Length: 269
Image 1 (cartoon, rainbow, N blue to C red):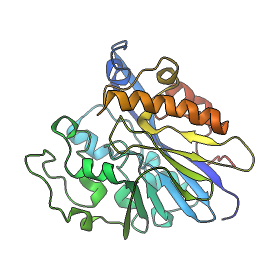
Image 2: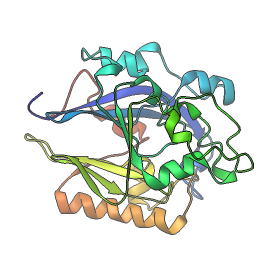
Image 3: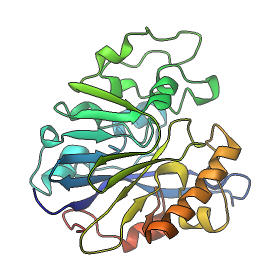
Image 4: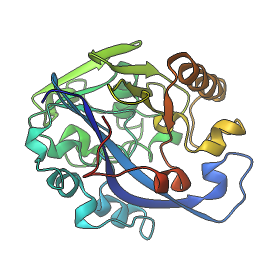
């Protein structure tokens, strides 16, 4: 691995009502959106930013929402570029909601990175957040009741299937030119990621701090949020970062933008 390459991994689609996507604005009706991960192939390692969702989990808990083929799983997408889950050195979670951690447990040789506040929320979510954090496989164990009434043991982090787990706070450069920026509000410990490349503008992946281009242009946060002020502050921070670094924004769940991007096996460099 020499020059940094970025691959967009297609993990299928989900559907929510328009008012869930665009809080207070809508319109109502089914809104189907992409879920994807970002593989950064770097001389310091292979960094996988988010791992999509488990179709089995959605079929059991929220049937009818998920559309995903075997090719649209972590193993299926990595195979398209000649890799296996065991080749991933780092899993980086923007946050730990069910549609972003579904493949964590497959990357058994990786170090998992996330914000300290995010792990706290995952382990003991607020009651209104329990369903968002209900896929417990990110820590490698069966799914217990996620409600605060039955908190998990303090040593739960020891059950994580990856060999290492590193908690972060603040902004971080996790490898040369690979930056994590705090963008809370959707969840308390949300990170967005920016990757600097030799041959193009930096790529700024918003995560769920910004679902779509419309979200940014019309200042609309998602229905799922833990702090309204923080969520709006993070939208502005993404605007500021894009201007500061002349970065191109890649939104988390924008079907129109997704059609214009290059999914794996194509790459950006």
